[in-house]
Image (cartoon, rainbow, N blue to C red; front, side, top):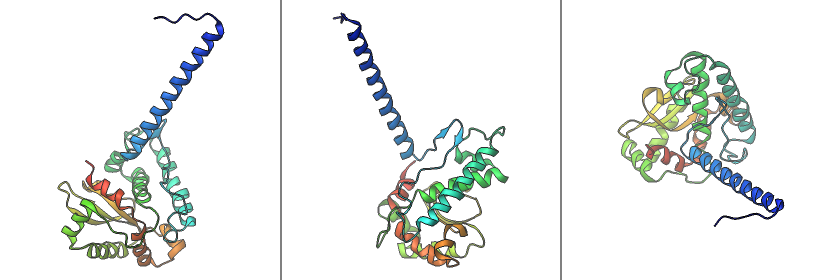
Length: 242
């Protein structure tokens, strides 16, 4: 049955209701899309530009392992600079508009340095949470660690050693190969395991700006403390997702 409106006021009210309904549906759809992409670890871009990631915790949430001051400089200044630099370098190149991982796999020079550091830092900052005592993995990644290294303790010792002995600046990574086998690698400067065809799961940053305000030259102490804040659910998700 067709609704017949008798007054202009009724028509106006009906139009407003329809507009509000459409606006609400659009908002819910945008929220759904944003959550989907965040859960899938896919980078969102605005107008073709990369944006600074949002931290999944407050800037003081990792204390005392990582101070609010270090987060302010490391995330707020260093990572922001990499984002700005990459956005300035990409226009007019064959890599303009490509996903971040594809850029890291194929770039060199300044584009690689900045794209690699964005990817490295997003995986780094995205893997942490509030400190926990006796913080160890569970699930499939825990089983793979024991299978490969014998125990979590043996894995942690080797991981810390690789981080402490990496000369200069870089990253120590736990990654998985195509068969799911776990591998620890040392990557210098802005390098990332995706360049080796590996799936990165966990990383500790050994650039001095990651720890110097809190630990000065005590890199091994910094590495030992980081286990308290690893969010193993994130690592498990990275390991099990396709």
